[in-house]
Image (cartoon, rainbow, N blue to C red; front, top):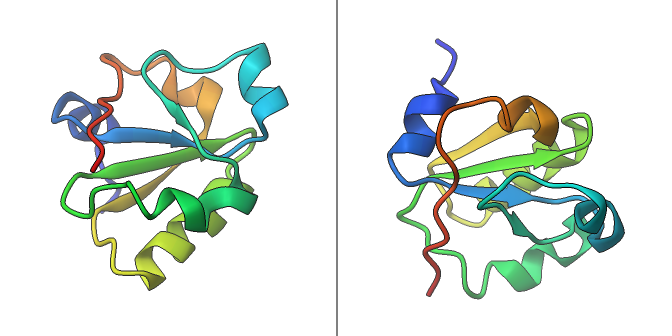
Length: 99
């Protein structure tokens, strides 16, 4: 069963954009947080484990890697949202709760 990303976002999920800072600066989804994939371990010091996280990037590849890294480190509610510009068409915006 595929996750309903729109419902997860409406429930207060964090949208975690794992593209580079330069990619993010050009264009990004409103309400998203930028933690480049190569800095994902640093992000785990302040990301909450009990809040759903939807990862996104340009195509879905880096976001899948980020999802796997987060899950391997105890994050249970992680979803690969794929391309950020697909997610921007969903209703609502991401929340930004952090430690």
